[in-house]
Length: 378
Image (cartoon, rainbow, N blue to C red; front, side, top):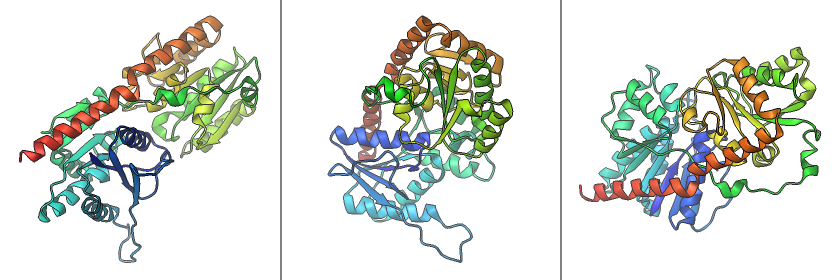
């Protein structure tokens, strides 16, 4: 198949999943075309099966906000015609599903039928999509897609609750390429991050309020009072400065490292002993899955789709949102006993196996084939 993929090319979960999906599809013999405003951060290799087409938005003083949806729709039309793309898979309802529908209608006028598969990732539904300014357009775009998927059962139920959906929604979970998490870093490299007697605790996110960054700091503060430890904070966002101030106020700034956005997440996770994800809500919890794939147990909230990823008492522990004391207790119970930690690390890796990319991508292929088959019958 010739498949077009539209996504945000950033460090966020939807962009990472879309990029990894496209790369894996290319390995399985499909021709994949990424169509977005810059090359996705994890798209390192272009070639005969993987292509990138930049969406350029011209600056016009007439517009207060430049019309990205129009530029994307036009680019989709041009690329479908030029490369005979058979199906487009858009990640994130706004603005991608909306732009794809416009492209589909323009192509239809030219005698070309373009099936559109839309994957819902989370904030496009629970935050942006449910806002009164956008709700009508999001609902329309979902119902006009030829196939719709969500990354968790929790997100599917949220979508059905917030919108009047007439389309079927297929749950196809996020995934992980376990082969990329088998690194043989040396002990001397670990010593660059922490002393031999210190446990390494990690958090990775976009540092938005929903991630409850201050809870991460508070849990670590409680842990380090009982166990020698370092905290690795990976990411950028609006809560970063407040987190740095809290570390200073608690007197633990020398035990916390703020990396910013990093391309060495696999290396950081390889040396980590525990991952903390206390989010207000998560549609899935891809960062937790990446941690588990590296054999890192997870201390998390029990919100949204996280319980579908992190199994309580097996790959880590779940707590109510904001329950810092319970999260701290669970963290200490894992880290204080080397044998318990070893067992949880092993079980975390075992849990990640359920989401192996080789088990999930065939589900998308089946959806593509089924959608194309239905369209050919029209």
